Amino acid sequence: TELTLFGVIQRDAQTVGRANGYTVVVTVRGPSEGLVTRRKSRVGGIWVNREAVTYRDVPSYYAALSSAPIEDLSGVKTLQRLQIGLENLDLEPVAEDLPPDAEVFRRALVRRKEAANLYIENGNAVEMLERTVFMTRIPLPANIQTGGYRAHIHVFSDGALVATKRLGFWVVKSGFEARVFNLAEDEPLLYGIGAVILAVAAGWLAGVMFRRD
Image 1 (cartoon, rainbow, N blue to C red):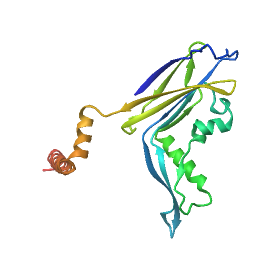
Image 2 (cartoon, rainbow, N blue to C red):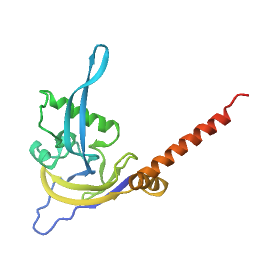
Image 3 (cartoon, rainbow, N blue to C red):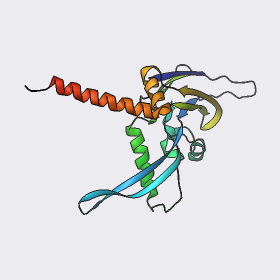
Image 4 (cartoon, rainbow, N blue to C red):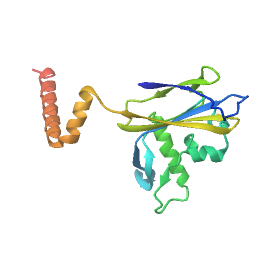
């Protein structure tokens, strides 16, 4: 599904007018998780895992949606400080025997997240409906984690950050999927027995349906 976000930029009495208008970027972060990125190498004709880099506090979901290309919003230091854009996302590796090309592992992590639609960067996702009114749609794929999500709306003008707004929302499961998830979490033994019974029943039914006389 997706969430639609509307915003209005209101200027207070002490703020000067901006002749060149505004650019807006919305960043969304999901619950943090620990991840391990591994590199495979061929040994004796067999591909095996060799080097690995462990990351902690990695956002399970990240989106950077803006009204202009990320690199055009502001200076590099500001973008890095605010963690705007995939290149500026702070992915902290555990400093234990890091390989010399650790950046390759970081790029691989981001690439896999992008392939799963969990990391998104779009410089044309925020629409300025009027000079001070904007709108964007936040995509939420089916494979995102449940939990609390944080959104930051940053407003720039002439490369300077002029305002920041923080919002939040929760992602929860509902319906039959929620009941199955809760059963697996709260009653793992009962869930396991039920899964075995279901598998046996499905196998028996398939044998009956496709049995040859």
